[in-house]
Length: 376
Image (cartoon, rainbow, N blue to C red):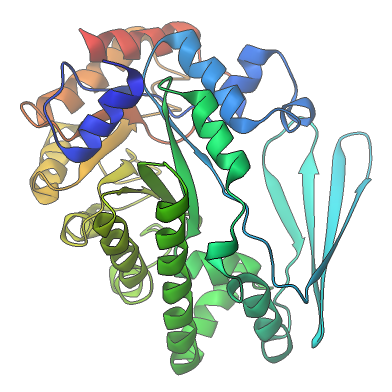
């Protein structure tokens, strides 16, 4: 079977020749294999860089590409990038609209994939939120230009599972754009509940229409919704269920109507809402991190997750990217892989993956140990 076929079989819960093994190669390890720094890496198409990494190790995997959705016709976007010093750069983006202008500033380093928001677009709630919503939500998904995304899908072929990126959960649509960060965003959600309920309905409708349009106009079999702050390391289970679960459920329902699949990336702690993943029909969730970043530890914890997923949602992840892959030995890696396999023995809804992105400093022998332990 091809890597893409194994991933899709796992997403659908169908028996396979063996569990897929899918380290999360994102920015750092592909850049290491290509021999480039992060400034150079940003000039390489992401799907192509991932292809190099997955083919190097001959394993399964997944990645994302975002179909282009043009902004409303009355929006003008201005970009300006300038160096701050020999290590850092700044990008200023202005969004000019008939009713006003909002802007954001992003800082990034030449040697690092991380970015930092130095200025957020939603500074004054009453003034900036309508502008932010107009820019993002007053778009017609049927007008999406999907040519580049489909070309990337064709180029990847069956090397790994390339998914169409739909965007984020509702809290992550609002919070990272809000001046004051997550603390201010949580206060907004507490103080402006009725207003944000209406915005959530608008956002949910947009996400469903976007999923429908991408299904109609692209061949992608799996779609992706990411996670920034929408996890139980930062939010309560009740908060997540109120604001983010409805969007995920609505998108999953729409994709399933078209015979497509939904993969959700849920960082950090997740144990208290694992049963929700199955109830709302998520086809795959990752990365089920071990402590301290997450709360899925050891064989008992893994068996509890397998039980709560109830054979309805595929598990992907759990090999610790720092303590095990970077600081551990090949035997440490094999031990964690054995735990994961034992917890899901006989269960086809398993992908042996990593607890988030593989670091550039990860010894290659540890990655080979992970792959060998998963495929034997």
